[in-house]
Length: 319
Image (tube, rainbow, N blue to C red; front, side):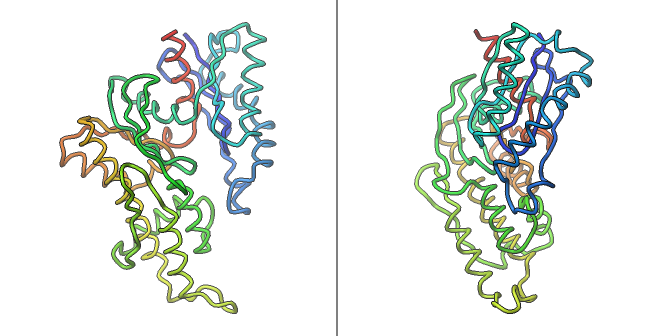
C-alpha cells in the first residue's frame, strides 16, 4: 500500500511516500532563511511559503519514490497542532487530492507523528515505551501503551524546551533557530560556570520560564544601554550552563517515568532530540539502568512527512 504524507504545521513544507511502513521518499523544504531575520516564525509568511512550495514538494516526493499520484492509495496529513494558516494549506491540499483520486484521507496529530517516528528506523520496537516529545512547540512525557494509547504523564507548564532555546539565543544576540547555535557553543563552554536553576515540579511536569528569566538576569549584568553586551560575558559558558539545566531536567523526569511505570524502553522524539548533550546523557543514563533507548536519526527528529505517513498508515491498517 502506498501512502502520501503531508506536513505543513509550522515552517517546514514536507511530503513523503511510504510503501506500507517503508520510506520510499521524504522531502523537506525548510523556511529558516526566510524567518531568520525576524528571530522566529512569522505565521503569515509561513502560510504563503507552504502555498507556494507544497505542490512542487509533493511532485518531488512522488518522483523520488518512482510513483505517480495515481499509484497512491492513502493520504495522511498533519491536522493539529500548529499554525492555523499553515495547517490549512496542507489539509486543504490533502483533502483535494483524496477527493479527486477517490482515496481515503486521514488526519494525523503532529505529536503522534513524532512519537511514532522511531518506528521508521526501529520497526521491531513494539510497545510499551516512555516517549519524551521535546521540540520548539512541545515538551511532554507519554506512557505509550500501544497505537493510539498515549497516557500523558506530564508536560511543560510554560515554555517548551525548544522555545526556551530560541528565546535564550535571542537574548544573547544569536541567530535563529537558537537550538543548534547554543548546542554548538555549549560544547566549548563550562556547564558549571553559572548555577542556573532547574525547574523542579512535582510529578512529571516541566517548567523552563524560571530558567529563561535566570539567563536573562545573568546577561543583564553584562549589558549597558550604550555599548550593548559586554565582551566579558562568556557566551560559551552561558550556553553550556543553560543547556545543562535543560538536559538535567529532561533526563531526570524521563528516567523517573521509566522507573515508576516499570517500562524498559524509552523513545526521545522531536526537534530537540537532535541536541548532542541530550542524546549523550540519555544514552548514558539508559545504559546505567538497563533501559533500551531509541533515538531517531537527525532527519526524523525534525518535522517531516514520513512520520505523518506512517501514523496515518498504521491507523488505516487498524481500521
